[in-house]
Image 1: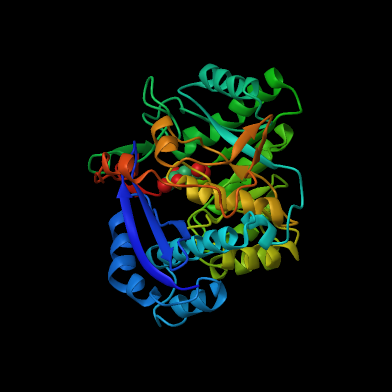
Image 2: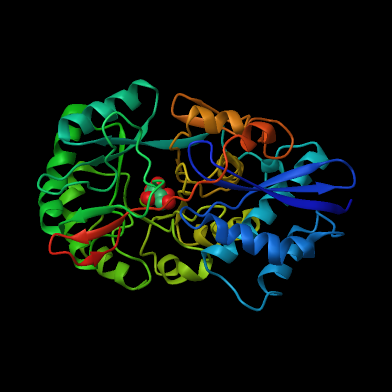
Length: 402
Ligand code: KDG
Ligand code: MG
């Protein structure tokens, strides 16, 4: 089998997606996701200008060699643009492999290690009563695990809080909007949120929380300690992770489990975090981590240190990445949990898929390959629109991590 064509479909059915379609001489094609929120065209250009011409004529079964060719062979390595582009190719090749062998991708990764993939979804509210209602709504839908975010009193436009009447979606089709941040108000508030949730919801529901890179390590230690009575499933991205040893400081102060990694692109971003057991869950996205090939190895490496997976699954990762995460999550032994922030109905229509949700778990389906397609005619009706993530400033105007 040979690759005869590779092209991009860049569309915006409610939000932007960069999709790679690789075609073979046997009529089988595969899909890969190359979406990098707010920087989509950089990946599209990296793919179309630099990668796609090198794929023609290659054997799509050679996922390892092609990955090394694009990573090592480029001389320049890592970074979100490069790795999302390589990830798009890698995932499309696994899709082709599965279709050619007439089996779901998870069977090529070790087969099913469990019946279904435990997922968590997002609850958001402008205040504690709204956040509580939102968690309850998702529990009624069947979710067993829910991430809870709430507006912080005295801080306008906190992270994770939806605009009135709309589902939460951070990217906006305008120049970056500005949100505000106060560590002091946040640290005083968050334990009161989780105290209320535990009192009202009982001990069983898994509660998660995303700090979104906003604290210093010692502040994160204080928060983790304050949250211990409410036994969170995890505290996510407590501090920016460029300084990996910062997590040692957090660990010294709290037993609240820690998840990190949605902005990582390589095991080398997490190597110390994992081998020192400073974290519990590794959250790299399949697309931004370079695809299924490196993520399978990363998961196996993490397993040696009792670190489990918690792959990123926000709406800026297309249904192709969602499917890839479900196939890998079903197969690896050290699966932890999968994020599920459902796409809009229009996005789901553009990307028909086999995966399903039932009673807290997701199932990738048994279609050959990844089980996701793209309706190109419909996609063409929704052209790319420039969009940005917000930025954050402290109350005195200092730019801080969003
Ligand atoms: O593109 C940025 C989003 O994917 C991110 O803000 C979502 O933090 C996020 C999460 O945990 O899903
Ligand atoms: Mg996050």
